Image 1 (cartoon, rainbow, N blue to C red):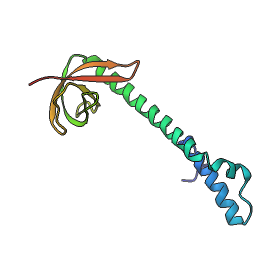
Image 2 (cartoon, one colour):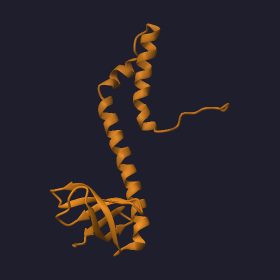
Image 3 (tube, rainbow, N blue to C red):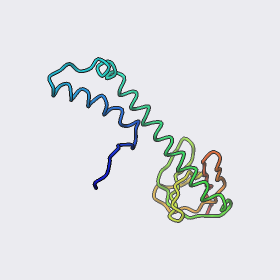
Image 4 (tube, rainbow, N blue to C red):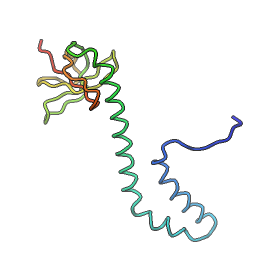
Length: 138
C-alpha cells in the first residue's frame, strides 16, 4: 500500500514500546539510556497491568451491553445452551448459547460442565450491560 502511515491502535498497550525503543536506540548507538526511561522502568509493569485491566473491563462492558441489547426483547423466553463454566461460590454456571451467540451466567444449582441446559432469560439490563438466565428444571 502506498499511503501515509500512522500507528493509532491500542495506545495504552504501546506505552511499553516507548520505553523499550528508547533503551534499544541508546544501547545500539552506544549512548546512555535516557534518564526518563530508566526512571520509568520500575513502574512500567504495574502501569501496563492497570492499562490491560482497564482495556479488558471496557471490552467486557461493550460485550455485555450488546448481549443485553440483543436479548432484551426476549425476556422470559427459554433458551437451550451449553454449560461452559461453573462457579461453586455463586451457584451459577456460564451458559453459552449458539443463537444468538451469547455467553451469560445462569442461576440455579445442579448444572454439569458440558451439559446442554434449558434456561429462562430473567434479566437483560442494557443500562448495566448484564444478562442472567435461570435454569429450568427438567
